[in-house]
Length: 467
Image 1 (tube, rainbow, N blue to C red):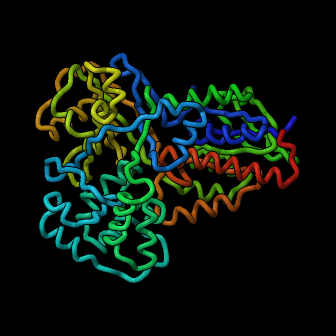
Image 2 (cartoon, rainbow, N blue to C red):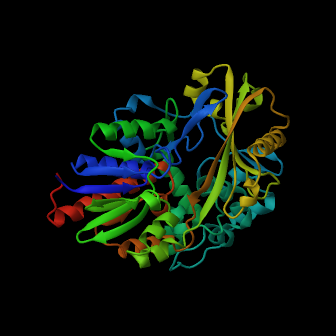
Image 3 (cartoon, rainbow, N blue to C red):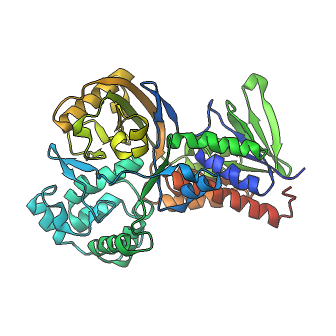
């Protein structure tokens, strides 16, 4: 028998790692603590219809997710959003989403006049150049100094909140907006960096290609489809299997799972841990305490997605793909997606219904989630009515999906923390997931496959029989 590798965690990162490992012929077991695989990718029935209640799209201009989908033979199910834009809520009204921005930083300050006051636009024009920085900074703090706090509050915050459910004045510039980090370290103009990015988007090799993609039937269908392909390759997938300890025994790792009164111990030659930072740190504590110490400092944000189904096609939801809400607005929801308008496949599949969703929850604002599901639905409907100017009618279904501790926060210095955690690991134990290399689905897939690739290289170098 060849090498046996355990993948702890059956989210998209762990499944991607298993896919990469299976290509090399090793014997792979995926051990997932919950009753299902897929992590933050999930479909559920709302009003009787299956729709995404977790992540609903991938960044198509990154290759990892689209590439994996095509490897699975699912390329014909890839689909893209309609050519409608979103809006930003500011001062109690909706403004068109500015074009040509870099994570909210406009390439043309005049494009945001109205959304920003005249005085705020003039401050934006008068960028305050500073000398090169020598270390990581918080996104918001850097942009406050360069362009003024209005850019941070009204433009950058709602976009970063959509990615991290966090706060820009605490998020790492190096991790979240590497283009701006390079400008900061070189002492270059942020506005010029945004203009260069806008020109590249318009004239570069990916100009004209869709930015986002999903699967017909919902992105949440991907884990089960990937799981079926893995099983066909001989990969073992076990749900309801919480790994409670990882112990070195000779040259092997013994994984302990199951209740304390009925423990199961299994030997493996190597391990990929693809669980969130806190449970990963608990597993690593006895075997890699320095790694555990670094990982235990990574905080997470909790959030909820409220999905709604309406009879008919309200006209107020037909012209945009949704809206983003800066934290300066007196609203609880931080964004809403008009899914039936955004996704033509969904509209075609359900021509007499309208699907939309709202996101609630930011880092360290868990109080907003301490409501019942019915109360969260009421809050979402109330805020939607405020933004749209009239109540939504004909609601025939609702669903609340809570993602407790769902999104890792990339604090200042995050990259150094992750590098230190990985450097202190034994060679046949590797990490992957949203806590390390990026929170989007493509980044997680890339993280899982890279972790597997690193492990395979080390096993080959050690002369292991991969199978």
